Length: 223
Image 1 (cartoon, rainbow, N blue to C red):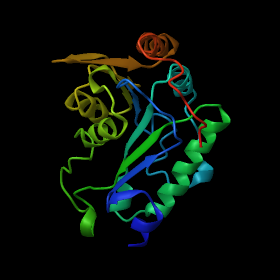
Image 2 (cartoon, helix red, strand yellow):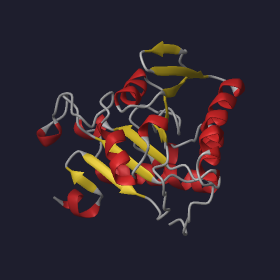
Image 3 (cartoon, rainbow, N blue to C red):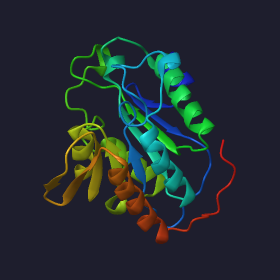
Image 4 (tube, one colour):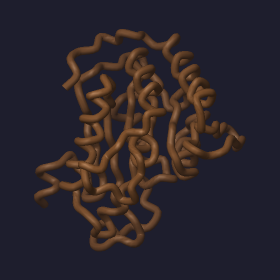
């Protein structure tokens, strides 16, 4: 009960946090990002804010999205909560540290969604194949509704095939797989993200979206 009051939980296992007050008219595409292993180095159920280290190769992508007025949305599975390894207060501290480190780099995200449901959990979080848990598309679809996004034109970056599957099921056309390999699925292209050349391809895709998106969409101060 305390979690539901203290944190932006729309249900016991779903965190939906709108960050800042930027306004995005015209149904823009979004840059969806997994968190652990994509934005920050994955330390296996990260639970200590002091141990959080950003991956340098994702920051330029967020820079580009911020520059072009493209919403940046974090979508992260957090089964460690369902498994009892830590609670929402620990998630809040770790996620706050991730956002602070991004802020120190001069970049920011616009929404964070986290799903704690898992079949190995306990109590109300013990749900098998919850629609919000990747590879299901629920978090992306929920963000799409709340920010009025064009999901088909949106991009996703993650370090697991489940991230790519969630993107495909949400109607996206392409995604970048950190340290993975390129592949073609029906209606969806998986692109690898290993090195500077791969990052260049991601930046080019963001910039292409930006050419069709107002680079200054009546933004107000970021909180």
